[in-house]
Image 1 (cartoon, rainbow, N blue to C red):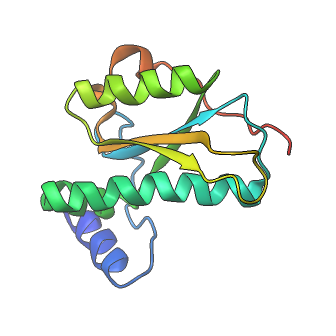
Image 2 (tube, rainbow, N blue to C red; image 1 turned 180 degrees about the vertical axis):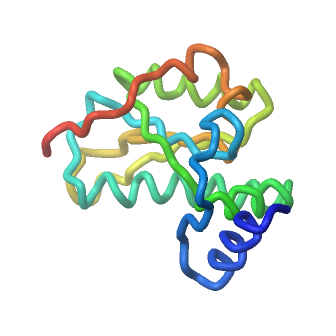
Length: 150
């Protein structure tokens, strides 16, 4: 593992997530987690953050259980995440299922409805860590998520 990656991994394992590499990596050559957010669900930042954390955290645990090297590889690149948007719950489920069918770790998060949202609501999904090239084509082309004011 190159020196910059070793430094990133050592830092992450010590509890400090930071990027120590001096060159900008090729966006297609490093592991990332994609957060997939519904555009039709209005959430505050205080609700969205934990929903995204649930999704990314679950992906990390599932990856660590199945592929420790991939997990460490992701930690070594400062753990990048990309948030993309889908129109509704149906598209969210379709995206997660397509990623699972491609052999990727992918999860859905259902909010319990105890605070901001009325009743149980699928809010976000996540896939990865994986390479961008591993995503199904239409998932790879999803646009960056713009927060819905809550």
